[in-house]
Length: 85
Image 1: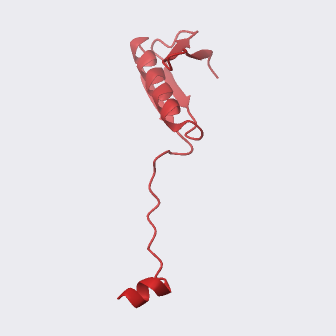
Image 2: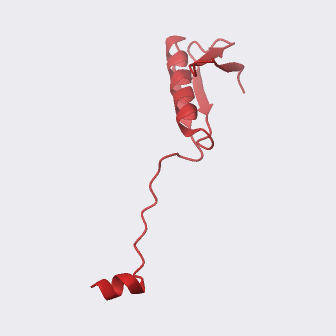
């Protein structure tokens, strides 16, 4: 695990501070997709950008629970729909 500090300002802007050198390193960022989905996604993108600016060799995002993923399901035929046909 790396030393990263994330802050939220009163006007809801996110700040990320990486407190160690990532120059030339392969960086893996593990970010949850649960909870505040939009905030977590923005935090992840800001961390990726910060690592690239700090000259990380490669940045890999690991998202165990992918937010906004669709779960396609077939529509069940109910009696109301059956009679409507």
